[in-house]
Length: 500
Ligand code: NAP
Image (cartoon, rainbow, N blue to C red):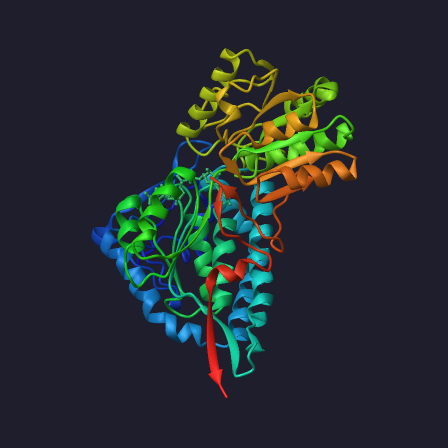
């Protein structure tokens, strides 16, 4: 396997196995025939296990010219990929879906080692991520246009859908595989080629995925992976390259704003899946036990490191104490530890910087008068662990009311009237998702209509579903991934007028 630069390490049995070695470590990730390239000059990025701080692997550290080579490959492959029959494109996705299922244990271990979450969470992400391949394998054969008669009867109007062209996909570390499959699935189905850049902290899952797609029959050049630590330097020339037609990004709002500016030069098609600050409203008539179950999912899925994580529990004053007490019982019973160990519920945060940010937000809330019901501190020892935390009586002046926590911390705020609760929920620049618990159907409709978010979960703590359009409004971005809408992001509409 040319250019494979994984360092064998006893702590990383996933990367040591032949299967994973063959799909790990490439600057370009050129997939046909499994040929992987070293980066220019042989530079590498070290990948750390956040549970221990030890280095588990090294991957190629791409330069600007490596990045350009990846786009060259995508551009060269575009025409023939666009003309590949939709059924063939779909069958490749379907085969990849099945291979991911067969390899779940290996992929989960790799993901847990690079990202820290418990194996059960990694398996859940892998199952979720694979579903995008199944969904879009089914969508690839349903790309349809329209035929109509012009109002004056003189011409015929034919509307056709065509692939956008070469895409650049930039993904974050928190869901190392699923944030890729949500983009790669529809692009393959639509007939687009792509350059994929995973997060520097967690590139291994994406490289393994590229290997699986090669095995599933994806032709050379359709998918090209770039791993780099010189991220802005390598990405900007690609975004400004006139051959690129689409940029799709999942990550922070701050970086998203920069990328939108850069993409203006080429007037690219752009999708932005950005940060969140999800409110979790619990009304006075809610089933409190069900709300606590939902809260545990909405808060603790992925250790709170999710754009959809409930960031603010906004609870009616009449049940706030009961809710906070029950939530505290559940949070304090969670077992913190290394993600590879049995029975662990909560792994480490992804890096020291992230843990310091969480600690800073909690300290600020306490300074503003919040009471710590459980947790409230980092866990001593190796790795970046933070104790599951519940804070009560948090004032809206605390920083965490407006900032994404991205960690296992649940602050409880209170409200008195529906209008006040809704206003608090909407009092943020973000608008990705909101959750609401109530047994009153009319209230559920009113609140769903009033929430300024792209998604709403009523009496449920998870909204992510490959068959539904995932995405936000306001500073949470634009564009949708999944559902019937997901493939449209990768298709252009062309109208042909035909005179009789
Ligand atoms: P991030 O710092 O914005 O990084 C995301 C990706 O952008 C990484 O691959 C990163 O590469 C890359 N990047 C950073 N600076 C760049 C630049 N100047 N030019 C081009 N690419 C650049 O975000 P993160 O910390 O990884 O992820 C957490 C954020 O993602 C949170 O805000 C979360 O809410 C958001 N998120 C949103 C969704 C959604 O669907 N709305 C889903 C998941 C996560 P490096 O790793 O090399 O820096």
